[in-house]
Amino acid sequence: MVSDPASPRVYPLRLYGDPVLRRKAKPLQATDTLTVPGFDPQTVRQVADTMLETMFEAHGVGLAAPQIGLPVRMFVAVEYEDDEEENEGQDKPLKSRVLRDFVMLNPVLKVIDKKKDRSYQEGCLSIPGIYEEGVPRARAVQVSYTDLDGVARVVEADDFLARVFQHEADHLDGVLFLDRLPAEVTEDYRKELLAIQQKSRTFLNDLAAHERQRKAGV
Image 1 (tube, rainbow, N blue to C red):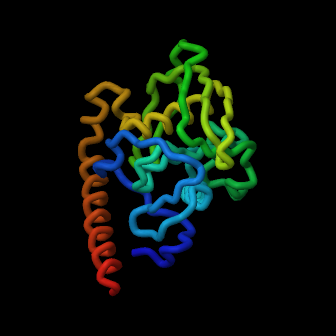
Image 2: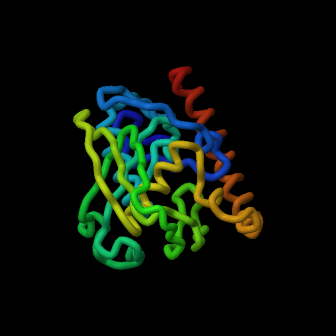
């Protein structure tokens, strides 16, 4: 399942139906050692770097630690040129379009513009293929967090980047974007969600078998 458990290039994404996506994540410190299921222990910086690579490969704008099976309060995010477009299918590599990248440990969000914005289409790397408009998000937020050097930082964001931060922070509390829409929206995607859940169960079964083999030294 894992080609290099010590130094993975990317992590497999946890999908809708995986219990880790519903757990409230725990605080962490920049000096911690983390173990992503299926891989050898790594530093927080190593995990963050691989999360960014995973996010780029999946053409995402953010990725939270629970989405790689790690229930800790950390997420990565980027601001792209024309970020709301995501420019899928363009030849220009995503990395070359990055204006800013963020690695946030123990982020705390404060709303600084309570007016709700519902104008952007929202999706999730853990719920592939499903996109919906109308997810209510605050127009502007302030995020207090710790960086990879253990330094306390504060950043403000509005519009699309504020939405990204709110989406990723939700993951740390076990909340998915579909939860913020009427129940009938989830029901409309019942068939698609059942298929994603099946993929999730298959992955978890494979992961459990892989872990048993590792412990047995196979």
